[in-house]
Amino acid sequence: MSARPITTVKTIVTGIEEAGADIKLFTLADPDRWELPPFKPGAHIDLHLPNGLVRTYSLCNEPADNTRYVIAVKREADGRGGSRALHDDVGVGDIIGVSLPRGGLAPDARIGRYMFVAGGIGVTPFLSVVRHLQRTAQAEFTLHLVAREEVPLAAHLGSLIEAGTVVVHRTSRAGRPDLAELVGDPDPETLVACCGPEGMTEDFERLTTAWPTANVHIERFVAPPPIIDPDAKPFTLSLARSGTEIQVRAGQTMLAALQEGGIDIATSCCGGICGACKVGWIEGRPVHRDRILSPYERERYLMVCVAGSDAERLVLDL
Image (spheres, rainbow, N blue to C red):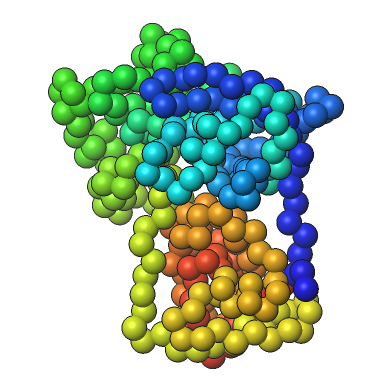
């Protein structure tokens, strides 16, 4: 049984570029050089790798560059295998399926200034956004790049560093900058964003609790450990389109229960940070444990990899 088609786009690897220590830039294009599906600045795509893994990466190029997808991948020797597969096994000419782009930062007329904080390779999603802002001149921006010594993607950041819109903080020389000073006081016309190691994003999240939710954007590399609810109770998932009912055992994830029931669900991080498994809900009281949906989105959607239910029955738009 399949609840919905999982849409992927066939792409071909047209370029691989060394972009720093253990970092490669991969360029993907339509095999016939058609335009690719559009995306917002800083959007993500899932790569369906030849070894069967599905991994999420941020797009580095900006939306106007619509005939290719460019991703930066740092080889993580102790990671989950996706970066090793891309670095070691994928070459120019290989075919890779990718998901439709999702997420990113939509242009907002309310925002007159953007302030980004990136740790190392966490600069990748913001590279797309600052390129877009530079081209459209729709708002001021500053990107603070925190790196131990070597600047990742230096060849692509050079002109922005020279212009002063990218400020490099080398921790080997001066330690980590004061995040509170960079963030400053809440401002309804400023959007602040962070992507980097978990310690940095946790500090950033704590420092922005007084900011309007819509003015704070956080990207994460790795999903946090799953939340174990000792009081979790079984509940029923009702699939509105098919009429199917699926039982979720106490402590079982919705994702696992749906998969046991033969329902195809797109997945990647399985930790509530990538957005691949977003599903609409219609009735019930979902417990949201993701780190990506806004309060407004939670009124309509949930992430089945981490969400739970506070009611005996939860109706999904499947």
